[in-house]
Amino acid sequence: MIIKVQTDELRTGMYVHKLEVFWLKDPLVHNDMLLTTEQQIHTIAANGIQAVWIDLDKGCGPAVSDSDHASIHTAQGIHQEIMQAEALCLRAKEQVREMFSEARLGRTIDTVSTLPLVDEIGNSVSRHPVALLSVVRLKTHDDYTWLHSVAVCALMVALARQLQLSEWHIRCAGTAGLLHDVGKAAIPLAILNKPGKLTAEEFTLMKQHPEAGEALLRQSGENEEVLDVALHHHEKMDGSGYPHGLKGLAISQLARMAAVCDVYDAVTSDRPYKAGWNPASAMRQMASWQGHFDRKIFHAFVKAVGIYPVGSVVRLASGRVAVVAEQGGESLLQPKVCVFYSLKTRQYLGRQMVDLADSQCLDRISGPEDSDCWDGVDTNALWMRPVA
Image 1 (cartoon, rainbow, N blue to C red):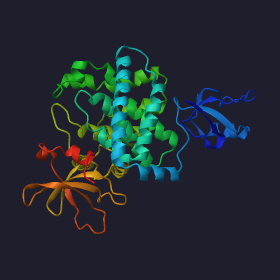
Image 2: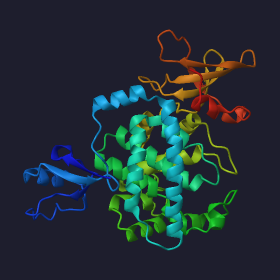
Image 3: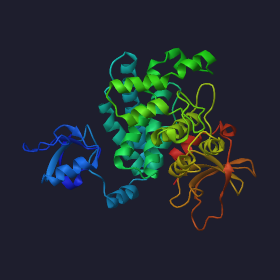
Image 4: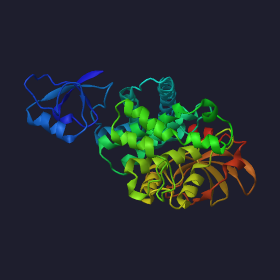
């Protein structure tokens, strides 16, 4: 869709369709271009251009005001957003699947066509940070490769916002997350879809996907930031990662961010050979891995996703078991939970929503529960469709 916007509404990430001037001869500014720097916007304004036409199919739209954000957030709770997130996941899965298929056939990937999807994912994260992040975690083995890309995209956007990066870098982070694993299109399907642990030889082949992805994306004309994430998202701070064994700040910020997002989604996802970790347990385990992640970035990730992310099974001080249904507004330790079991009476309870941040609530989380102990309970239904 092509719309007209005022020059003072321009921001990086927009795609200029037409300037409607014939006299501007600046190499930075022209028709059919993506705004990637503030200098381009300044040049447009400095030349007296009052309005331009932008293409929403190729770039982002006007920013939503703080008051609009507030009204949207009030009117649209997490459960309505979850329904929208489910529909978005279906569309995103098909688009990513098609992209991988094109790459597997040796065709150049049209990465520009993914920008509207990145923006849609970013908008969902902006409206309600945990809805899409929680829904996309519920992937099946058959969907893993495609929805893992969508999950990492959403996590990268949430993390970039937490780090207060520029809008251009937020969009770049989302794009990098969506495309980070495209090199797996070069890996034999028998290895990619193997329902068990890879052999040493198979793992050696799998470790080639970062370099394959960087090559595929370079052919597509992607920017260096996105190329770097595809190549280096498996590097570790202590230099023990691959493919180049980079260490510390030799790893780019976006690649350090991707390392956290990639691992978190991988360990919390069910696979044929292992059940996904409870999100809260994943946070604790990842925090204990010395030399793996950039600590500052990991702490920002925890703030973005929550110490007890939505879907976490937790034990309360009262001896009850609950599922985290919604993040608390003020404290990472006081989310809204859906109680379903009493450890004291060993009986299932009628589902009850408890806001741990409520001043009248005397209960608190004492720690995460082992998800394996609750295999017979549809805990996903508790947070996706909780009682009022």
